[in-house]
Length: 426
Image (cartoon, rainbow, N blue to C red):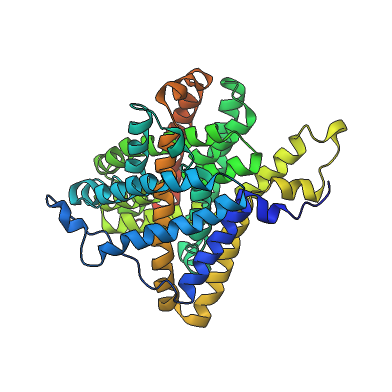
């Protein structure tokens, strides 16, 4: 396979990397030193817009400029994108405002990602998404930029804090649940192998981010990835509500409850919220376990790229795929994710934890905006009628069964690892 250097400036994956790096550089050098905040509110929604919130328009323009560079790079219609972007940004803003409502966000932990998805779904499943708005629904570009920024938050010193116990549980859960889910999907429900890999990555690792990484690694159908993301976000709601209450009914120690919650719920904000509903210690342990699983995104993407390169029909006669073939399959935004993690981890001893944390507070805020726009875009491009038609509901059943298996396996492991066998029960 001949090396195609033009992909560095023609492919969306690479543009996500470059735009993510530009954002990180702007934050690290202090060019972006502050972001307008959305305030918490109860009944008076104007409290969501404190002093300085007028700069949200400037933030929207900045995000538009960055995204527009990517749109131009992949040679898409910039005029249509510019027409629809303000609407996508507005619904993203609305989702973040809803999530800041005290009861909705703080008490129940219903995060912005869910509201962004629901707002997009509401539009597309009622009046339908017009063509000019579809051009701005750049799901993959938005979420891949967000994932590169997420890499900066996965620091080596925090991985060490996760410790042997968190990583041990993560490795066992991820490998066991992935294998169970993949075998169930492909052999019992006869689901396409690429689709099965995306479903299995989402249920076993960390939901949305893993689904995107796996979809890129196996060169899967983008509709399957969007479907999986919708499943992850919708199933996270009942799990967030019921798991803390079940843990209390079982009388689980805080460490065990936290490890159980962190290892099963597939979105990080929902993990934090569910852990907090149980106890402060449970929230901390849940966050550590979820962080340990997030670390495995890059590893999983590499393994899947390798496996599906060997499975690819582009290698007749069972010839071994070349290094270039494996590289071609590997999602480049995961490279950006890994590089960002390495660079920011090396900055900690140079600049100090406080300085790096202040930079990350900026980049994580921007990541939330990219993710919000991505989830709005998923909703704008998804119809319930089409979701139901996808393989006659088999992926939904397979995903749900795998999640139930995950719940029971993780509970058992949490008891063994955090319940007193390896360390004192807490």
